[in-house]
Length: 124
Image (cartoon, rainbow, N blue to C red):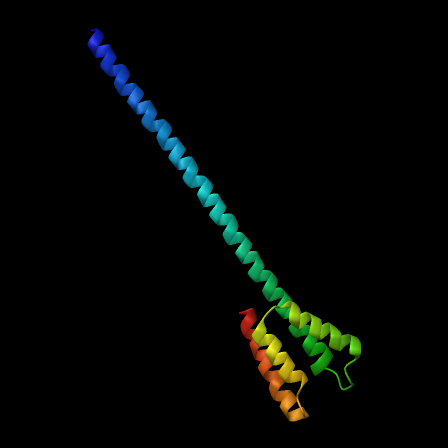
């Protein structure tokens, strides 16, 4: 009778250890999953912020450069320059510089179209 009781205790202890180990394993998996989800959320938020910043620059560019018949004020030029640099995109900055250094209106229009196309692509 004593041997049967010892076997039962042994089996129940082994099952208990297996269950505890399973709980530990799944707890670790859950924590890793939560961390991964948080990292994905941060990346998604950063991309959304970048798209919003690009859209704001594009709107400012359209409003101050394309929708005006007057000379662009110094303050607006500085604001545009600052905003394009905040996007931290070398290709956009290079295209902006090509637009700004255009020698005539035809070239400026072509460079503006390229710049807007690049901005649109960045938002997608």
